[in-house]
Image (cartoon, rainbow, N blue to C red; front, side, top):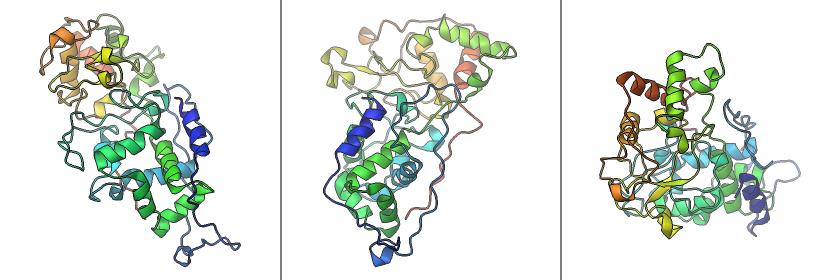
Length: 345
């Protein structure tokens, strides 16, 4: 489902729980809210160079993103008030993370936190693509990883005057849960990764020769672009990697014929990430590249079920460096996101 459709549906599913309306003098209805004045929301994030134009709805507003950022960082969304979305999807690591041993409910995790960048172009969410929209994914993810029912959490948070002002600014007649989904979706769908080194030099006659050579290896001999297709450097499809180190049916939860397949992660912003593959079995970008070049051997992979598109590739030391440098050139090192927690209400 396209993001535009997601937000149109969101408008249509308004609930009966209506936030208090402002009085005629413009002050908020509850006495404790009278002193709450929200500053103007920061402008919407700019879509960086190198990315296609997203199909956002008009509901992706600066005000929605501002509330979504607060919710993204707030540990009060979790069962124990210690885990936030940012705890796993760390901005400093490309909105991705390692594999937490357990969820907030104590259940073991098989998969690491995937990156949230460039979700605006994703039609299916999750490593196995079982969710058709971000608004389907968010409540299930908050319940599964953070142990909380979104409706109950939002009701509690909306009692905080500073939050209530944000909800009222967006709420109109919608239920608070719908406002929270709208805001979290707007924030996550505007986490972009582009304007990288390669984007700035790709069509330049002065592009570094080694970088151009790395791109050519990526596109031809190494066959990386078969799955990591420009400009988003993913084919949005699912491929078997042999289950790697832990048994996980992956896409098989949706389509039994694709058991053991996982979504191709985008390489944009990959140089910021700590772990690679769905189970975090590769601890560095170089390890992930070498695993593919070796024909997908090691880390517990079962060669009998590996996608045949992955073949062994022999490169010289110079060529291997050129390839690695190109992959790193898909990360914007000048404007990399940092982990700066906003002041929460």
